[in-house]
Length: 475
Image: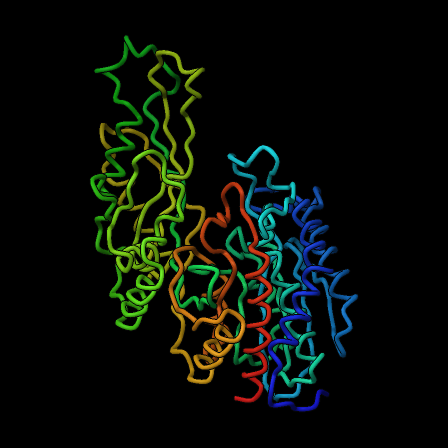
């Protein structure tokens, strides 16, 4: 066991972590980025393709090579499920911390720069470009690096367990089975540290306080069994695209993007309203200038605080894909038989995902215009998450850590994306405190082209994790 030491030398920790990142972790992430370890939703043949297993093997080899006393590590593979890397490190405090990350990735996406690509790692301007480095292959390496930093100074920490899954980008549907299988080994958790979130900037530690949920699926409108000449049919046969537009108008006000049915809204807690205003004051117009607007496109709001609330606590719709529309170069004068749209409705943190999916299906399929064949096929209904009240010790620890390694106080803000594991862990460990954070800041573009990991920010975040672990042990 480690001897209790009350003072953590932040300079020594920072130097050690930075050195390990440069010497070991960045090279590992370069190799990890080369692996097209797409999540099962995007690679149904993931098992035979072997890329996810290769990512797990890469992380497992590095973890086993770390000189952490008492480290127990296992790559678990439940029948028919993606693998999960589980580690356990004994501690001095009679409590347990759960550290979370994932190794599966989003698909390629188009628009990568010529000299880069999703599976082509490039370091430029202190940023490591490539799919998955920031979202969030770095998590397992940062977690053990933080523990090693504490061990180097004989700083106490609680028992730590790690869950590194490979299904997060598909909704973490394999995670509940692993939580059940590992329940007795994990035990009672009183602090969860998740390294799969965002940051408002790279200048301070950001603590995620909420996450939106998601109701997603495919809206299909069929009007014919085959395409026909538009000159012959238009004006007689209704356009499947027009019908799809009318159906979306039941859901969304096209003039401003507001979601119309009130069932998709919740009352925003007063504390979150205050945090959104404070985050808006910190970020200013960077809340929207970080996006690559084309031409004269303007943001939907002019208040940074309102922009934060829009992307964290209010529902909004995105159409993320389409079928039935030929490429322009191949488009003849044909009235098409079918239009299908992939819908992604972000819902507020406190709204039940499955209920939102059922309501979405009811709204879209009811009384189809012109009697067209309309179906909505759901593929994801994920509930968001709202953090419990932050304990005084954790609030103090994140501020101290941010001041020590960034030189600025910590900030709190909800995130607009959906991380289904958070609702799962919140339900599994209702008494736990949560530090959900990450390195996905301005322009990092997770899920899109030119995703990057801000290396210096990742180093500082690693130090902050170590600092919080030390504070937790003495709280």
